[in-house]
Amino acid sequence: MTERPNERTNEDWLTDLQPDNPRQPEALADLRAKVQRSIYYYLSQERSDLRDAPTQELQQMAEDLAQDTVMRVLNNLSYFRGESQFTTWANRIATRIAISELRRARYRDFSLDNLTAEGETLPAEASLISEAPPSPERAAERADTLGRVMALLSESLTDRQYKAIEAVALRGVPMDVVADQLGTNRNALYKLLHDARRKLKSALDADGLSVDYVLNLFQR
Amino acid sequence: MSTPPPPQDDDHSRLLDFVLSQPLDDECVHMDCTDECEQISRMAERVANGERLEDIMPEFEQHIRCWKDCREEFEALVAILKAERAARGG
Image (cartoon, rainbow over all chains, first blue to last red; front, side, top):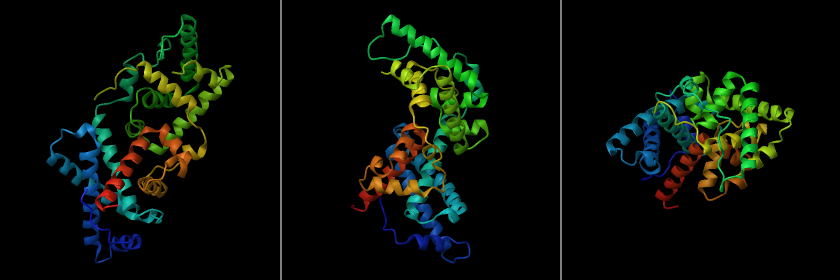
């Protein structure tokens, strides 16, 4: 990445980016250029899935995402407290925007409803992975325990919690995508999943299944 | 992609791991991963400078082990900062 010396301090950035500052246009252009370089570096060097994408396309993506980043930075300026470099903070916003966009593009046609509708999403009889095939007794014990865990999942969780767990933990769907589908944001989704996990642990306890026992049973 | 592939054995293992073995402490869960969070930016700077995340803030290290979205974003930021350092000759 070609890097220019960062000539502004955090205070300079905060001052120069104020709307009434005559230096704002220059600061905006510098910030845009800075995050655009970062995003382009990330897209072109760190993303194996974009390895074959034409340079021009990546440059255009970086330019668009940099524009979004600058707007987001301006909207959040009042939150910046100076604990990190201003440009690191801006780059963090840039990476969040870029990665979220890529996730949304990848899961553009994804629907939580389809996920459930496509059937056997939480099969209780599934055999779990192991370095060596388990003995018949152990396999039966696993199938029985998994069935109990899955039953507790569906009984103790709300529909919303169940869908979220299913998508995030079982199918590996990104949080941004699931949050969009549930009409919430990522932080609220963390809380939803946290509560779901806590509830499930309590349900396991009440059912006489210890967490250690379950994890040990399915240990690879 | 319209629908992720059906769950495989690995997925069930991940599900159990996610539900049962990840930390449930509130600090870890309520860590603010929004745009405003500078703590994460500061940690990324320190990691890019060669420190180990588990030494700086073990609870965040646990957090990103649990939440792959956060991990992906954190690692991306660290990669960018390292590239900037390299470009500056640092």
